[in-house]
Amino acid sequence: MNELIQNVLQWGIDKNIIGHGGKGTRYGQADKMMEEAEETYNAVTSGELVEVKDGIGDTVVTLILLADMYGWTLEECLQVAYDVISKRTGKMVDGVFVKDRGGE
Image (cartoon, rainbow, N blue to C red; front, side, top):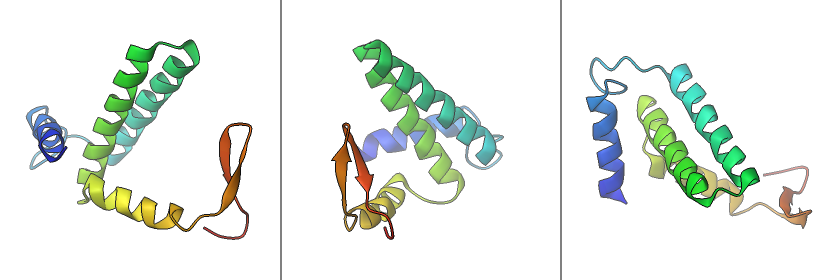
């Protein structure tokens, strides 16, 4: 996984998205993330499994680059999220986990 992440970061540098002199912006990267997430959603609803897998990967790529633009790693961001959700309570409603009100 670490090698894949490093490959993605190098790709972002090679494509002039991130790094010294990179022309990518946080807003542009966030827009790209939303575009990829929407494509993933559309693939899920259409049942195109190859496209679902590609969409998940593309979305993760955009998140790796966005995290880097803030000086963070994907692992740091995932740890912050896990620290919150690991304490969360709630229940499943119609196939979706709904967190209890009043706290994280």
